[in-house]
Image (spheres, rainbow, N blue to C red):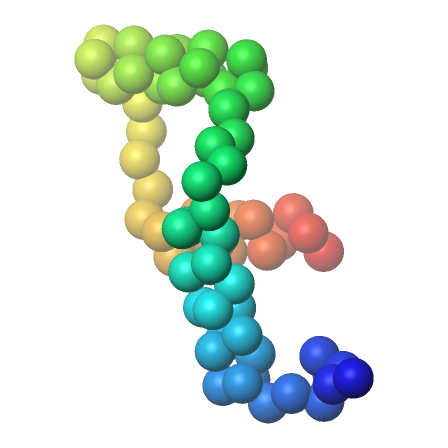
Length: 69
């Protein structure tokens, strides 16, 4: 059996893309949790009332990485 740790980064990306493609064609649908609809509605309302602050994707990624440390 091939160990993931022994794969190169490009090989890992190829495997990941294959998994995503397979999952995308899967007929099983997953429903979102109840809190997700409420969070989306809250964000929509905040945006409609100009109460939302947007940040760039780069800033968001850095923020998330900082939280993970």
